[in-house]
Image (cartoon, rainbow, N blue to C red; front, side, top):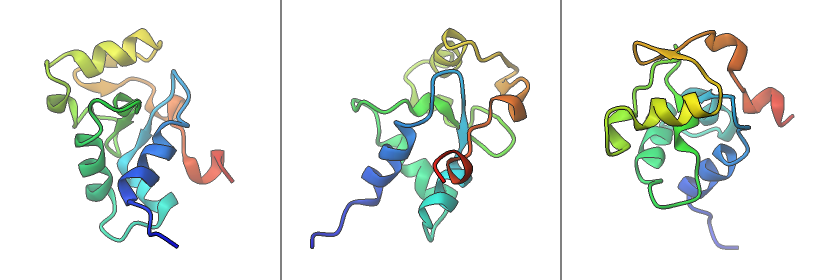
Length: 108
């Protein structure tokens, strides 16, 4: 059996995040049992451009848009989240715990 690329595993999870919700790099890493953890998920998100992957829905563990500089312009990530009804202030998701989607519980 061919070994699957971990980036594709990450992308499969990210594609399941509903519009109007966010998750974290660490939550995805824990769900997939990735050794290098959140950093590995971050690398996958950085390489996701041009794919059908809603990378804007993945933020850091406290709701900060830490990957925003990979979206081409400084407000693109926030603009995408705002269009889905997620409030962002000072590069941080407002009411983070209310919009947090954890694959470990949502996909159990």
